[in-house]
Length: 171
Image (cartoon, rainbow, N blue to C red; front, top):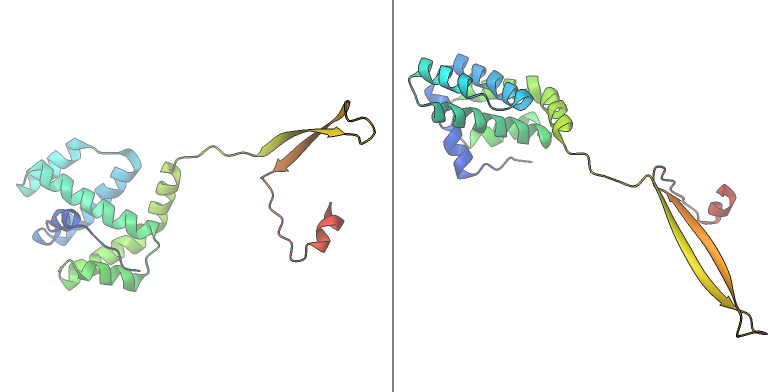
């Protein structure tokens, strides 16, 4: 499965070939910090001063790298697919290898961070339904009898049956 990057993300990543490989590795570290703790403008400003570029350029480069790593980790892209996805960006072979190594070294940690950030949706553990039925007796149609039944459905356990005739034996 290849990762498709929008034109905006490609533009953000276009800054990476213009800097040294040590800077790209540092951007990778900053991207992981961005995932762990959120955006830190001071880090972007400090890197921008060292590189003599604008703070927005550094921020966009880190965000583009963060997107590349998170989407690749989220989809569990293989090494070959990651290389093919990055190859489309037109980077040098050395930069592609560096990005691949950055992905391979950090994909488990990124998946852990993403799982911690994922929202927890409410769900039912036990669900009760009340079923009220009025039954009329054939002898006395004017006096209905009430039958109240409570149906309970436990959603925490799922049992699959191959043969429905076994269902009665389990209950």
